[in-house]
Figure (cartoon, rainbow, N blue to C red):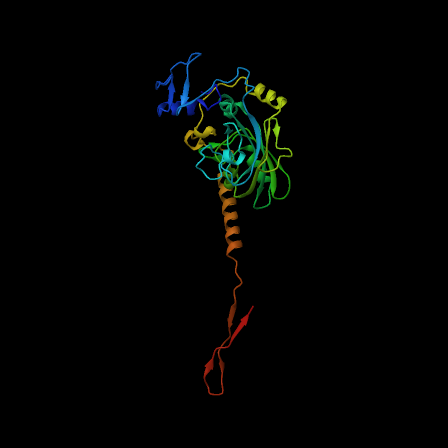
Length: 305
């Protein structure tokens, strides 16, 4: 089923476990071998073998708009499959958060999904990120060296300031909401995130919501890059696995100044709290009581703006 491009190996196992797969009309067990001539069906629909040269498989680049969800579950409103409307059955390679936008691959090739997503392949992914406050040298240095999130330290990466609030970052990891979590740890909030490049493929002139087929040269470079990758089962929905469950706890290196980070974070929190709680208040000055003609004292109140 994976070789045919119908789904990933992990998802094929789940379909078999749920007795949704038949071989020659019989429900198989996990590990059952299929030989030429066997009829394999999912929910009664026959799965055809793909061409040996894979020319029938689909590989596209899509500029995902904000609000689209990277899932193959058609009951989810705003899912990426309905948004693209491709005539063939395709699924995303990896994911982009719903509030994020930019480049994502989709394919009908179940094998290449796992090869590309394997973390140790160290494939570049480039993002343009906008944050809610000016970028400091310390921020760039800390992001570049690694930040403790999800029980681990992020790998060193390349961070380049673009403007006062915008920077570029090149990652070789795919931790859950990684960039947003990294910025949050350092006291920043991401207001816009756009993925501009994956490996050798750039977003280019694709407008949000548009897609195109990957070129022969792009596919040749991608296949060369993943040639040594093993086929490994990944998570459901053909997306990157939830790293919270897989991340191993490690000790924070001594070189990371946690005290300084806490002090910096508290300063940022205090600054934001003051910014959002400021109100124009009317002050009242109370003057000393003055004697009146009747011998009684009264208070004189004066308002100041």
